[in-house]
Length: 165
Ligand SMILES: [Zn+2]
Image 1: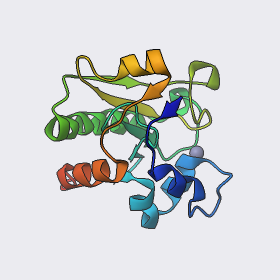
Image 2 (image 1 turned 135 degrees about the vertical axis):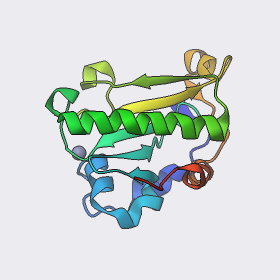
Image 3 (image 1 turned 90 degrees about the vertical axis):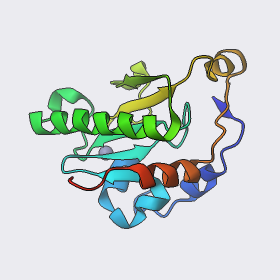
Image 4 (image 1 turned 90 degrees about the horizontal axis):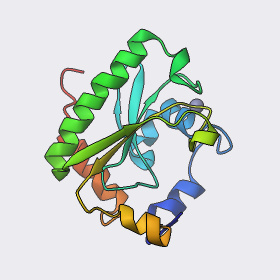
């Protein structure tokens, strides 16, 4: 899958992770000081929210448990509950920020199912609009993402309801 413009990718690939060969999500979880560089939007007790570096649409988020485990089967009830509670807040924040007409929520379990980080389960949240760019993926193997990732991050950070967490 090609992207028309991914200026953040070089920073990401060059990275400042202490363990570049390790798990992307565990690296992000381990260092709150790199939240802005790695686009971590929010940290909860059992899970955190990070922007997808290769977004399908503007506002494409992932909700990730701190626990490194390949499937939801291993997650505790507390973690599962928090993932869904964070999903509610993410949808509300994305509605406020982008006024999407719908959402896809999905978990790919295993590389065969399309998981990009198969060792560390995560829930994708993708805002959708009627007639959005999915046809480009189908036709041209290319995605069009009009907003630069740091802009998305700033926008959602400002809107994210951090109080009361
Ligand atoms: Zn991990």
